[in-house]
Amino acid sequence: MTATAHALVAGAIASKFPDPVIASSLAFTSHFVMDAVPHWDIGTHWRMRSKTLTGLLAIGETLLGMSVAYFFFIGKVPFLPLTLAIVFSLLPDWLETPWYIFFASSGKHEPSGRAGTAEKTAYRIYKNENFFHSKTEFPLGVLTQVVTVLFFLILLR
Ligand SMILES: [Zn+2]
Image 1 (tube, rainbow, N blue to C red):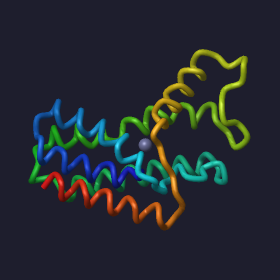
Image 2: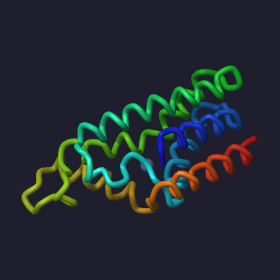
Image 3: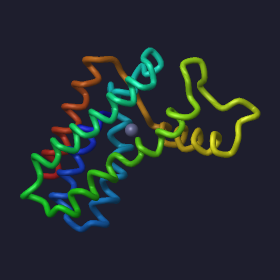
């Protein structure tokens, strides 16, 4: 899902569970639960754009999402658990980036037989993380995120 969706749910988690370890673990877990809901994000159809543009959009959306989460939750949640929850909610996507940045391309969906350890490791992280990943098109894929975020915000109120 978008960084904004992940960061908002992370804020709600930290407000309900301010313990830094619990907040971080739940936020990390929430990433995979949320990504299992069919959604659209910056990564959808990335092969149809340049890598640079996708990277810039992803960085921009991440900064936006973190800002929105701070805007809503700062003052209600102590800074440390809030920051840890936000970072851990986004960490799975950051761990995937080496595969996208260094190895994947528009015509390449997996390592070749002669790939090195770094490439194989990057691919394995990407592959494992995307086991439950589910995509759908814009705009339905945005609506599913709004519903998912609202569900968690109400659940964790
Ligand atoms: Zn993700």
